[in-house]
Length: 518
Image (tube, rainbow, N blue to C red; front, side, top):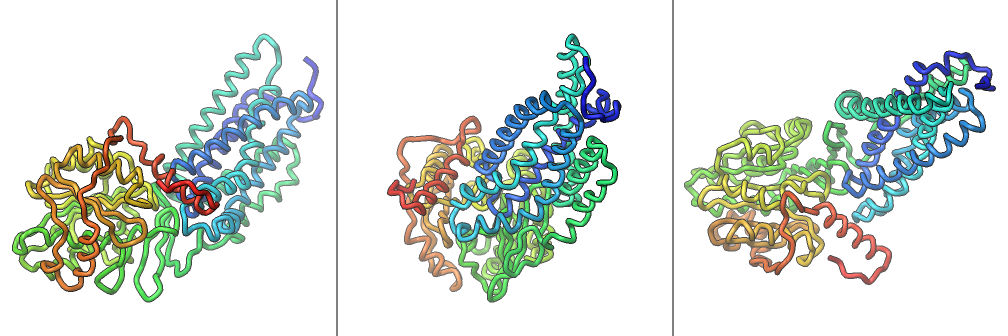
């Protein structure tokens, strides 16, 4: 076979070095993908819709990279052109954290008041930010195969070995960011470390050691970037956790709020007054359904920073001195609990805190509760499907006292929303008594189910500060009649799809479509 015409040293075409090249670039692809998800999440959430767009464009970029890389390798089979591609991918990756905040913020401007931002913003953000480096990295594997081939009769073995190492690199690029670098150092540091490695590799392939000054780009990037990933008015702190991106910010007029993965919704709130004027107020009426001299046990699945336990302790217990609420709060993310203790007045007296998956906790405990509140969301409006199925509600029923009840906050655009009606139907397949009503806040509905008959809250039995809330709940209180249709099961619970349909319907309304809102 004829010698390759780029004049590079032979060691750059040795199989061992090329295996290292494809391993590192394979890892970089996955690091960029996970980094992209973390950069997008504060602006547009991390729903299946966003993940689908992200994965789809990454796969499209890789497929185009494979094709173009193979053609380019045949035309210019040398390490120099390959090095330029890797170098370009590294520089672009180094600039991603710097470009993400202003570009994504501009994309989302004016749209964050509606979930339509997920569709438009994620699409534009993915295309503009994350396709180019993945496209360049996709050219590496076919290029490496071309450089490594010495004989036709071992081409299959050579190609198979290199693609195996590239896949191994993808595994490293999956595990290291998810379990170590992002939780420990953050998404910016993860991307900049990957960028530095790509730039160094590109310089080695090019054979231009004097160009090492380019490495200063990722090293200087922390000083050039914004101090926070997504600034919001009144921002106090931001935290990247293994589960999500969280921001704590001050509210006008006092109080604190927690937003997870986007700043369009509130996952926890603390206000100096008694009422939040959000759906949390509806949960405060539940303990008053029980005799005033009877202590009430409550389980909160999806506690976040502890709004509900804190309100039970601060506002409900003084009105029930002989029947206080004993609360267990289950939260999968310990970082949110830490924020609750620091900023949201979550104190030990508010109840026991358990860090676990909500359903896993129910499977592992034998305790029974008078009230089980389900308020877990993966971001602003997406309920984990495992907390919506008939099997889950059967598990909940086994952990309720004889007169206990389960209460859910559901985001829906109208009483006709398919998600709300499917949840009504699913609850009805387990509990003989179900009720639904509008809750305080935009698009919030309260679903309540029990083995005993349910009546709307009686304002006369409540303290004065809750009577207006009770009147609002009672005004819309009714037994749902969703009719025949889907009952969510562990095998089939398209919760994310139904939520996406609501999002898309909002987009249609924004664009002037006459289609009916589901």
